[in-house]
Each structure stands twice: as C-alpha cells, then as structure tokens.
Amino acid sequence: MKNLLLIFIFATFSFSSELNTYLSNLKKEATKENPNFKEFNIKRGEGIFTSKHIGKKGKKIACTSCHGIDLTKKSENYFTAKEIEPLSKKVNPTRLTDVKKVKKWLRRNFKDVYNRVGTAQEKGDVLVYILNK
Image (cartoon, rainbow, N blue to C red; front, side):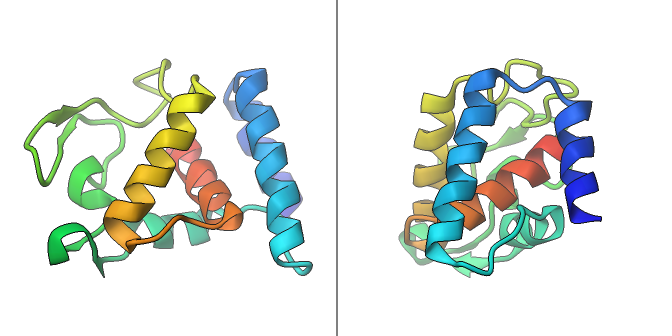
C-alpha cells in the first residue's frame, strides 16, 4: 500500500529529475540511518510539518507558523512578516524545482523549528507531504 501511495505521488506530480534523484538519495541515506526504513510517509511528514516545538528565539513554532495550513495559499514568515509564496506545486509550479534551494530551506527550517538538522527520513517525509498538497 505504501509503495502504491508513493507511486501515485510520483505519477501525480512531474518532479524534476533532479528532485527525483534527491529523493532517491534521501531514501538511501534514510536506510543507512535506519535499516528498518521502507518508504517516505505523508502522515509522518504531516506530523513533522504541523507539530509545534520550542524553536528559534525560544518561541513555540511549527512549519505551519510561517507556511500556514493551506499550502495553496500565500503566507507570512512568523519572524520577519515577509510574504511567502504557496508551497503547493498545484498553484506554484516553480516550487521545489531547484534542489539546491530545497536543501537550503529544509536545513534552515528544521533548525528554526527543531533547533537541529533534520534526518534524511524526516526531510523525505516532509517533501512527500508538501508534494501531496
């Protein structure tokens, strides 16, 4: 079932080959970190994206604090009030096309919310969650 879900996600969105390669590399890394790892999971990604933690500047925040719950809408950075374009590729097809930027923002946002770098599994889970929105 999980494999079918992942296949559906990949078939639904036209990922760049660069993003496909990045997800494949994350999967290999996640398997090295945890030999029991099988596939990225949208539900785990949603939990990571929506759960609140004491993050940057000692404030209780979640990814949704800046990106909002509805990823098809613009939002506002919690700390700077700068406008953030929608994360959803459904309304913003340019999102998640530049893997260098994807890596940069995953690293930065995990540090802001979790005060640490995310694991390969967490990054993959969050990406499949976002790509499903």
